[in-house]
Length: 340
Image 1 (cartoon, one colour):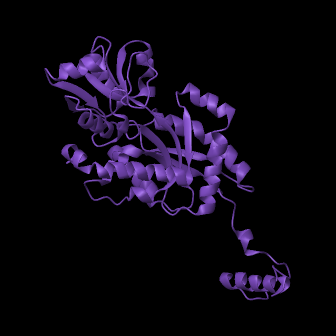
Image 2 (cartoon, helix red, strand yellow; image 1 turned 45 degrees about the vertical axis):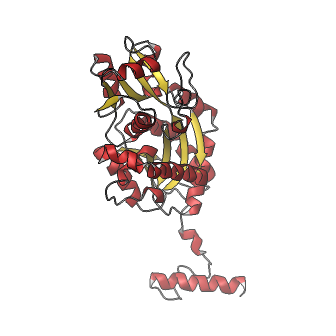
Image 3 (cartoon, one colour; image 1 turned 180 degrees about the vertical axis):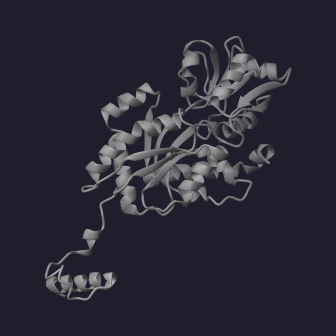
């Protein structure tokens, strides 16, 4: 078929869809390809849904990324007319509302959001309308290390804490029941045999306050949330949940004999989209994140909020998420003791 014939056929199909006759004069003999009707992505605002309250690590990172997203989306997607990021905080139900909203959104690239790898536990022992394995994983933006801390006048070391626990029951502050920090604490308690009873608090700030008041012996918190108090000497680190420790005379969880816990105990910060996001939109968003994480101005800004980017993209981010979910599934009998 010649180009002219294809053009005429395309025009006739276009008119048919409009319910108009082939003799419509406004088109005349002009050939308008149907692709002209499709606007370049993004053509409208994008919702970035944060599963935590304003002011937390996920929220600060989303707000820091937003202006760069707009700038690079327009650079990468030629002809894009929009790209503004509207941040929506949905902390209800421990973040489940946020995850559900993202999951059920139309897969058109106009709804994305944050994901905490530990949230997979929500689906382990109860029916959920979310299949966490089906999200479109765009990027693992970075890793937050968790630390176990005590009061400045508390235990002098991990060994002293373990010894004290054999003599009396210790109180250990953890975050939201069934979520990231609690999941990590369960793994540490079981595999490292930490002799302590969990005390549940809404989040990191409440955990730290409980330590400062002396209500508990120790707490599990994200490192960046506690840095100011650690540097000021108000709280003391007993162990870092990673392969290595940056604190003199403070061991990592690997160094106290449990290297298998270093990876699953970390907080992996992921950005997700609804299942079945079209490949071309996924590629645009992933390319945008790659640009941002190579932007010197953004990297300087990230340093100010205590965030160290460690990006993993697209298929690799998905494989990382699936491997964490597999680890949780393998240890389901352990989690069942605490979550049911």
